[in-house]
Image (cartoon, rainbow, N blue to C red):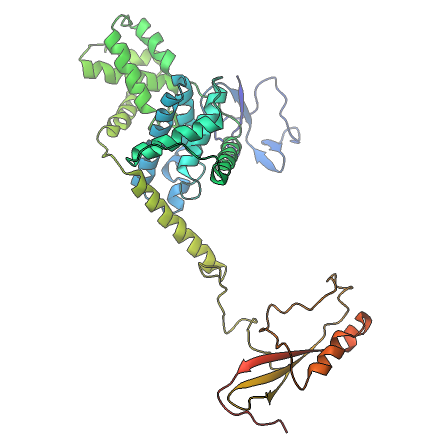
Length: 428
C-alpha cells in the first residue's frame, strides 16, 4: 500500500523530497521549470510516493501545538503515555491483533503532533484511533464495541463497579464525536496512515545474527518494541533503527554478547547515537511515576478555560458571553443625545411610575426595501415597552395602523416605563 505525501503540506509531514517520483508527472498546475508542485492553492516542494514511515522534522518535535496552548511538557508526555496505554488495553479487550494496536498508537502520536491536547479530547481520539486502526489492519470492530470497552476501562480506572452503557442520547452524541474525531485524524494525517512496524524486522535481524534460537532474547526484544510504542520514537526514527535499539537493549539486559568489531548494527544502517537515544527514550518509561488520568484531565480543562477566557476578552466578551460595555465605544444602552426624550409623570405621580416618551426617527427606506419582513420593529436594544400609556395610547394605535409605504415619513413612538426616585418637572 503506497502512500503519497506532500512534503510541504499541512497534513502528515514526511521526509523531504526534492521533486516528484521519477517518471511520474507532477499533479497540479505547476508550470514546467517552476520550483515545486501546485496542489490547489498551495505550493509544495514535491510529492513523495513511498512505503516508509512519516517522520517529523525537528522543529515540530521541539515545539508542539499543545505547548502553544500553554500545556507543559511533562503533562503532554503523560497524556501521550496514558493514551497509548488506553489503546493497548482496549485492543486486548477487543481481541485485536498486536499490529492493529501498534498502528493505533502510532496514529495517535502522529495526530497530536499536529493538534493540541487542549483543543481535542484525548479519550475521543484514542477511540477513533482504535476504530481506524482496526479497519486499516483488516480486523474491523464496531464503534459500539469500542465505546463499551472504553466505558469499562474508565469504570475500572475509577474503581467503580462496571455497569452497562445505556443507549441514550449521550451514547448517540459520543458515537458522533468519535466519527468526527476519526475523520479529523484522517484529514490531519493527509490520509497517509501506512505504518511500517519493526516487529518482523527484529526476527529477521536476529536470524542474521544467528540468535533466533534464543527465545528469551527474541521475546525481550519484542517486549521492548511494544513498550516503545508509548514513546514518540516512531515519529523520530526509521523502523530499522528502532529494531536495532530493541535488540541492543535486550542483549544488554540479558548480558548476551553481540559482535562489536565492528558493531553489528552498522550492518543494518543504524548509528550508535540513534540507538542510544532510542534506548534512553524506552528506559525513561520505567522511571516515570504512575499518573492519575483525572488529574491530567483537570490540567487540560484549566488550560482550555484559560484559552476560552483569553478569546472572550480579545473579542470584548466576558467568559459567560456578556458583552463588555466600553464608555468610549459607540454602543451604549442609554438613549442617544440627538433623540427626543420627554419625561412626563404617570398616574402615580412623582416618585412612583413615570413614562418616558422616546421619539426615534425612522431609517430611510421601508422595511421591505431593506429586506426586513413585516411585523413589529426589533427592540433588542431598548427596554421593555409599557403595555399602555394613558396619554399616548391613541398615538401608538395610530402609528401601528399606518401603511407600510408611509413608514419612512413617520416617526416611531416608544413609551418606556421606568421607576424614578425624584419628582420630574413638566417640560416647558
